[in-house]
Length: 509
Image 1 (cartoon, rainbow, N blue to C red):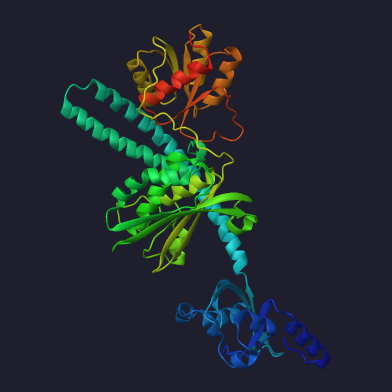
Image 2: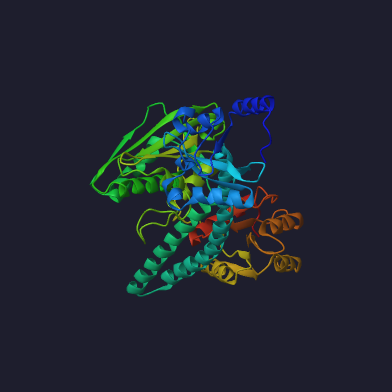
């Protein structure tokens, strides 16, 4: 209620309102026209008092909100309920938007008649952005856990499929059938690539971090990139002569670059140029690019394509988001690149302007080494394990267990099978001591890593192999340094190599 005015009190209130600059505080008449305007309102909304007095407060609402009748609804609710409060987008004089918290209170005289409204508006854009960032982080963590779990289960299926197909191809005497089996194996390998992308996004992919020379890596895959994108696109590469080595996984970085080049090609329907460049950058303030202080190489892939608007750019690296047509993209390419960068200690930064093009920056930590390591052994090469070994195979998945045994027996091995860690320990306690133990990690009650620890306590020299598709074991899990890691899904050659490596670390009986 409005009482008899006291000039002194009124002056104090006016001084108080004019001193507040973080809130827009102003009065409306019963129809919603502005009758007063404080400095905070001018700072927040951009209008001077002379410009805005007498205009309707719906000026600050979007056209969509005005058409829906939101301003009138706000006054009605305030008048009937005694208060209106809501959050939403509001407009400044220059047309820019901000996220506002709005409160409207009715003002009545001593007789209870409505004489106007008091309106308070506060800019809470930063608060909303922080809340959205937390929500996005929680959502991505949940999606990461989901995709990581799915990828693990899919890896088990692919292990069984690839193992069976590999043996079937070796035993086939019909060339036509062998060709069909090879086609099926190629499809299974593509499935394995998909799980690698899922695991990369979830940051659970097993990586081999080593020193890599960027110009050599790109030079070695330049022909592949040109064949992949076609003759309409020109690839230009430029690197300084003193570019340092970086720390990353060579194979995964190649896959990431190929993904980025294909994305660049797809954005240039009429042809154009893709520029791949790199330069050394020093980060002194982690707030700039969300990286720890240190030396990095910024590897950039830039195109002259359609570019992306702000909304598309914000969603581009989210898993399963794609602007490509149905069947033309999984939406996992950029998510995989982002996961690789995170595991490598770097960062993916996307920059794009509609009609100009897109640049994908891969920030990779600089290696302290000055020369690259020799190339690793090709995956297809066999390193035969000692003949006539007995191998204890432990896996709770019956399909994986059966196919691992199949691959081993095809190599001339004898096998003992266990579907749980308890069964494996019982087998060892009975006196059936194998030459090597191969165990899955993700098993109920006792995990593979825990099984390895228990075996090592009782049999210090028994060679051990742990099969898993995850790069990092769950927090709190410790893996003995001499346990050989075998990545799922694995081929017979990889299985054979793991056996040989385990025997070199221990003592095969």
